[in-house]
Image (cartoon, rainbow, N blue to C red; front, side, top):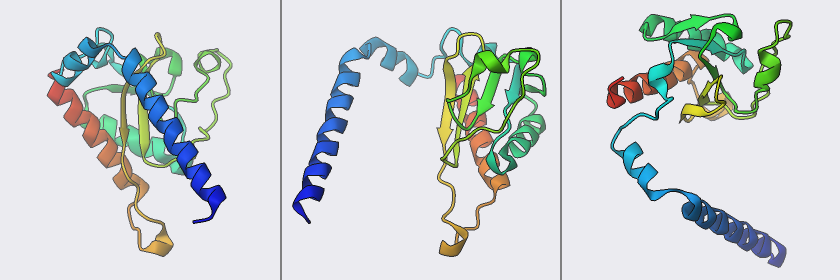
Length: 166
């Protein structure tokens, strides 16, 4: 391995370790125990009744909406101002602009595929998230469709909601 690559790799490794240590030091140990026990946060999923699914790449929002409606646990709205939470494939959503009456809603610009975030629209906190491995590219033999990806992610939400007893 060339010297520059070794230095870059070591620098990246050290940066990751220091970031992890900093996070571990700032995290309240008691909060980890309550989450591990399956308790919900005070303003967690139990307060969510209506979800707005933001437009996403590859029309993923259509499949998320279908799966959520089929499940029946949450109502899905096409007006973000009527929602308790937002389902998106990225956390980089301008919520203030989204809530204006004349907002032009555009597709998210997420670079990843297979992630989902349920964001509380009042507190702007991420209430739930999931990451599923999308299949390999078509050229590598991957065959997982966007529909299957949405089914897996909503299935994980269903499982997590049932685990928390909500």
